[in-house]
Image 1 (cartoon, rainbow, N blue to C red):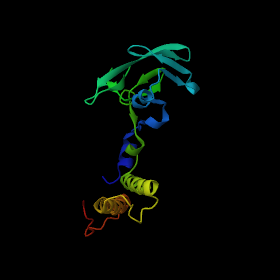
Image 2 (tube, rainbow, N blue to C red):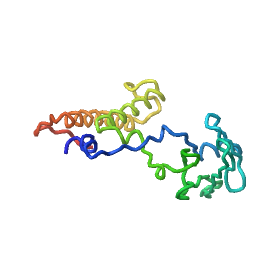
Image 3 (cartoon, helix red, strand yellow):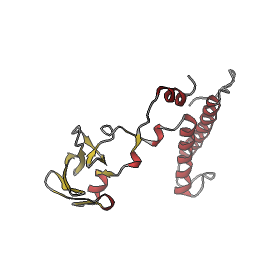
Image 4 (tube, rainbow, N blue to C red):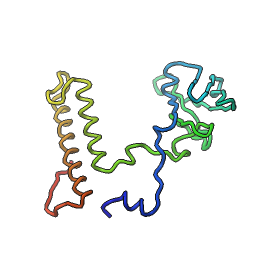
Length: 185
């Protein structure tokens, strides 16, 4: 089977909704700011921190979002939310149907899970190049404080991803010659 998209389409598969489409609360972000108040104005969610969680209202309906702390090895605490459906400890919870639930309970997926292989390789390559350009201004010239071996590894990774992306495009078009060799990492 060369094209999974066609296979699942024939089966009548309905893809998962994307995480990025729902409002999300990140416990690390909230507690790093040392805030005791939670508000999402466009959804009319307002809550304040009590002893063991956030108590508040959503569109006039009361809700409780429990918070759990985990002790860190070098002092301090790390805070997590508990999913209101499965009660598992989660870093991020998503708001849907007036409840905060985890990604698994809401059956949500990531954008990268919907991409085909060639697009995934291309996107990974662009992230590496983007990081080099963002941090150092260029991908062509080695950054001044980067080890040569690290720089060469990044360049080799970019070349590898280009080859894999090209091969995945050929496979998708069902044009893969038998004698074509692409080096593996």
